[in-house]
Image (cartoon, rainbow, N blue to C red):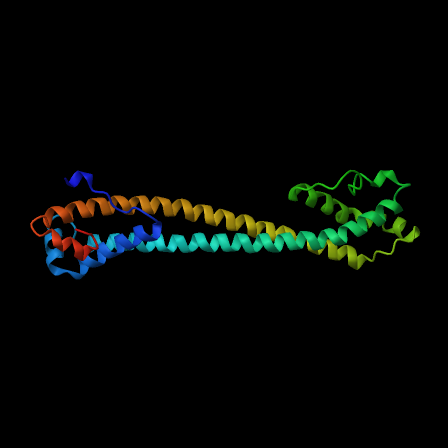
Length: 219
């Protein structure tokens, strides 16, 4: 009958609560602890199970932190791109007109073609524009384009800010994925630990199965 033990079903919260109740119940009941200790489940082993629980709870917290960091960076990144694009679009239109007689600069500043929609492509176009704009400052001034060096510097600063936010976003994704994977590994280990533990507990308490209720198990 004990080979068909089924434990830790339902949500992760319910699974952790089941394990938490079982371990705490065993540690708090001297009679049960004495019986299961003879089969290897002494205080030290129970504390190891408790530590595994704590590890899972920590990983869940890290997973949530990674998700929050990712979402915050994503929101800021979306707003940063919107703000930069407003400035960039205005500058791009003015520079395109001023350089219509100077095609040699169009490629360097990526003036031609539609603006790319993906982040990497769009940011590449914007970066090329602001990184090479100094080369045509004289032409712009001669053609009456009133864009100050401070405005171009602001564009570069906004690009750097977006690049930093992309790093934060990717770090949040990475941390969340790593914590998720580690959490799943730890939960699998806890499930096996609980299966073995309850197998022994049911065996040693078979003459008084009501004692299983002290471990949070319904009889």
